[in-house]
Image: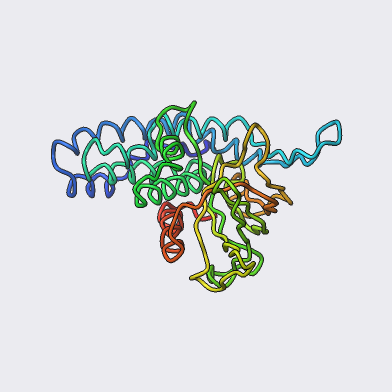
Length: 299
């Protein structure tokens, strides 16, 4: 018996075609239709195979190198790295920010992500977090400390494209971020902050950057509890080629999203930059949470 073959997901989805035809201006639909037909073929011919390879070769964690030096290196398979390049080539994040079709670009982007998600071994999850991080930065007016990050997150060049993580869940777990965040931030002389705490479920542990929450330690050594005491920080995962004050405890064993490297992390002096007013930190980072939930990539 011959195994079923994957077809062009776009051409085989009349509902999606009908929705786009009904909601996009005719001249925009004509261009988007051509691009999605091409992309649907790429999903069938290339992306589906890569996704399968990622499922068969889940990420691994190497704690120590041959000389006994702690490196905490997360290794992903070549197919996972290739999917990241394809995300840049196809502007799966950038499409929503270059706005070549004005506000209609978001619909074009969502349609491509929809076609990509089912065959990407859940790469749609870190991609959604990347989109959410870019949205947060844009909503803050792209402040100077985040200009570099925004340029990387919205890049269409595989050599410069960044993935963002999502670091909110701590040991108490649950949806009560305000009550469950124990990580603290101490201000450094240069105005940056040193983060200390344990992130229990950090999605996309191979990411280039992340946005995360912590409580600032005041001059008197006190911290404010609850949601009002939380602040939003940006940090790079690596600085000068080494982990930025981060120790990877272990990778999570999961069902369904095995290809996505998700880890338990110790922040032991991770250097970070304050990016949002305290009272708006949770609402800001919820852009990432909503993006992850609505891109079929929850992990």
